[in-house]
Length: 148
Image (cartoon, rainbow, N blue to C red; front, side, top):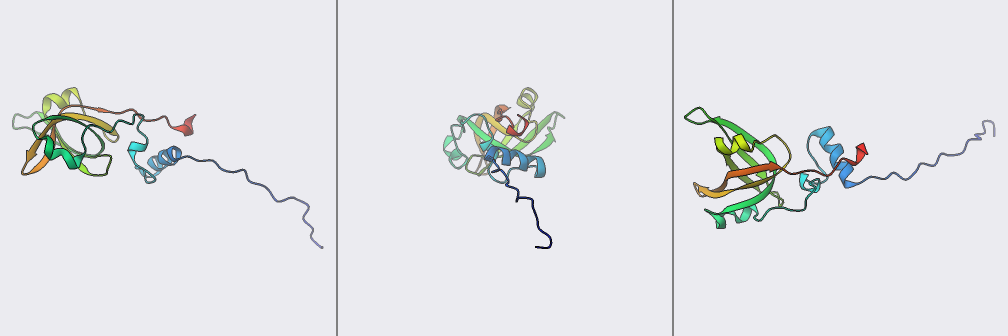
């Protein structure tokens, strides 16, 4: 041959990846997970005592739910105090709403995206269930394996 190639063809190593790494990459790049949900990143397997679809059955009772934060709406009461309305997704992907009155919001603030454990009383407003929050807290996440 006129132009003989003496180099050997490179052999690439098998690339290893994991769902957890993919989820952290997606959150870093686009702001939310696509290959799974935030529940896949939560350190605890606890998903609450109640699902969104069953909330009506618990009217007037205190429940604990785990939800992926979607958004909140800050408002002021007629007395000028700060409160919020929140929207979350449960583990099945169904929405549920929360009401954070000034005393609970002051002691247990919402701090943006993440998976939260919500405790509160189930109320029906116009036939739609919601939770009057007593306590809320962000659940810990599994460590990012990319930074190890």
